[in-house]
Image 1 (cartoon, helix red, strand yellow):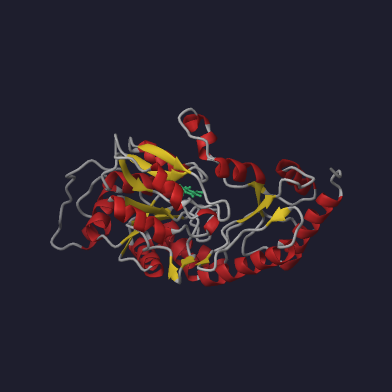
Image 2 (image 1 turned 135 degrees about the vertical axis):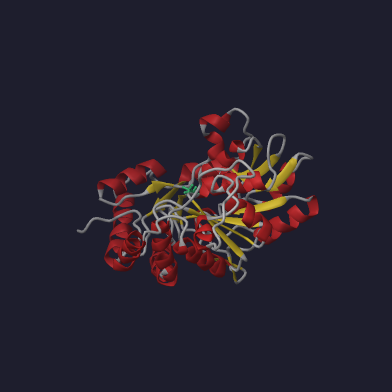
Amino acid sequence: MTEIAFSRPYFGPEEEAAAAAAVRSGWVVGGPRLRELEAGFARLGGAAEGIGVSSWTTGGFLLLKELGIGPGDEVIVPSLTFIASVNVIVHVGATPVFADIDPATYNIDPADIEHRITPRTKAILPVDQIGLPCEIDRINEIAARHGLLVIQDAACSIGSRFRGRPVGALARATIFSLHARKLVTTGEGGMILTDDAELAARLRRQRHQGMSLSDFDRHGASPTTFETYPEIGYNFRITDVQAGIGVVQLGRLPEMLALRRRVAERYTAALSNHPWLVPPHVPAHVEPNWQSYQVRLRPEAPLSRNALMEALHAEGVPTRRGVMASHLEAPYRAAAPALPHTEAAAAECLLLPIHPGLDDAAVEAVLAAIDRAFAAAPRR
Ligand SMILES: Cc1ncc(COP(=O)(O)O)c(C=O)c1O
């Protein structure tokens, strides 16, 4: 049997050629490929501006800071997310306030957001967990009622749709990750989308040490123009080698979405009446990109989540635990409230292999390994 990968970038000769072309051109950072990638993301997400950064994390930090969020402010965030969503709130000196999830979708529960609002609340940072868009319309409505900002953590949801609209321009600002596990990847990287041109200009300056003029603009300027540094910034740049790869990846997004959907549909067909596993629930108004395929063990299952992962590992099927509960990690544990739905999901879920290169034989092998693991389980 060929080796089954849990996740794998979908790269081909086009990405190799794009990286080589950037190297050959001499524009390896701050050049035309970055412009192209930013424009491509903005078009796809339906936003006016795209700002490429070195990761979701650096982009998230910068965005919160530029939106004026800092010490004394509270930001409501789900605990059931990769811990980066929470860490950036602390990085700007603000306080993360954890909200519980809707156990059906694993996304932040809008009703619980309402319970967590205080006079210090400044923003809501909902996450499109496992690539499934959060209830952004309800969240925007709550935010508007309370005068809060909404920043959508779309690290996992490039290509997903909510009520027919692409993720990208559904909040004040949206951030995608281009990390190796994401659909569109440049190894590392991030992309902020917003309709606010003034905010975009500030973010572009800040990612480059606060410089008044980009390298690209300075390069083309005649007569010679000198940049200034009116404010203190950072180096959060993404390279043009990465951007070149990203442009090709964006072009292949429809193909990658279709291939992932095929894997997900086969898993769901096989698991939808499973006695012990619960496949993901997809509400009728959302279209996920199938970034992850998360299944949940029913309480009466004869195997624990970890035992099932071990049994699959022994069969050559790699899995990962489901999305983590950030509030149970050491930096956040002491101050965190009880979040029953989050804690249960974090304990009972696992992720099955999914990526565009996972062929039908591999999918059947995963399903067969699941059957064997349960058949060999001791009866309770
Ligand atoms: C929901 C979520 N937010 C943020 C991040 C951080 O992204 P990056 O690794 O690009 O900083 C991730 C990465 O996996 C994520 O899944």
